[in-house]
Image (cartoon, rainbow, N blue to C red; front, side, top):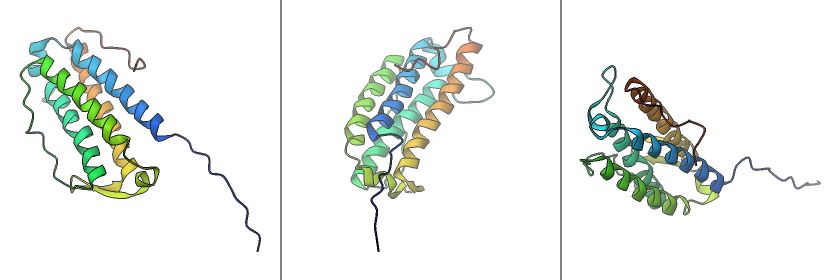
Length: 163
């Protein structure tokens, strides 16, 4: 029996995935910055949550989820621990969570990306799918922010300018 070694070409490295995600986070941060203070917390369209609430959801997912993945902790999702009063509160926490994401993401081995994990005790998928969900969810909510900004007569940042 003859065996042959075959090399598997990797589409994307974990560093590239993190860079992609952080590019989206950078753009979402710029969307938060574009909002006038009052409208960030109060303005909505069609009964959707104000953008401050959407940003709070994103803040409450990324860092805590990665910490849970690394520590194999399935603690439930919780938005209650942070109650911002100003845009600056949100931006400061956003930047803090960016560092948390960088810290924990770097601790996930290539093998762990394929491992099934029950995120927040609710979402049982491979780790890489959970991370892709974080990015997808952010894009979805940022789209709502773009709608709000346009309804307010404010030009949102170009969606392709992530850095």
